[in-house]
Image 1: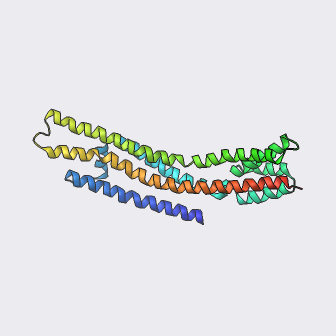
Image 2: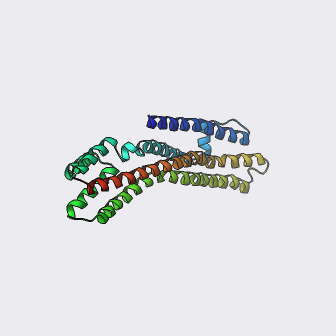
Length: 244
């Protein structure tokens, strides 16, 4: 139920932001240029970089949907698998626990497999060595979980830069008209050209702001999953040490 609610909130947020920010973008340029513009005309103003920004926005939405399903406790530490594996570990059935983890790959499964392999390879291992082995694998899994959110940060960083590049190119074209004397009699044409050149920067910010917001939210979710994984890792070590 929590995942459904989160997905619904995220979807509503994206659907709400897109038309509102997009309409503001169109209205702002229309007011600056002295006319009414459509989205098609906005794309023409932005040039080919607008298509790059569209591709970046599509990737951002896909990444948000992916993270909604990835950063869940049921993916990091499946409850049914946890109960089954912990019972087997406490009963001394290490190989059975490993086989169960092989059938259900997850960060939790990777930690259990590492612990069982360490015990099998190092007979009579000490608690300290076992803890070190589990912590090493736990750190690797935590790194994977935390790095999964970095794509949104990249989108939030790159999209304004793409927009700025489009603005610089657009302004270069607008001011180049000054040298040819085209706008000598009509300065309003130059002003309209500059306002149109700003379209790509606005579009880049429209993509970057929601991406940064989602990055902050998913970063907190990733931190909770790492904390959960650390807690379960301690239980795995305790179960192996105290096994029958």
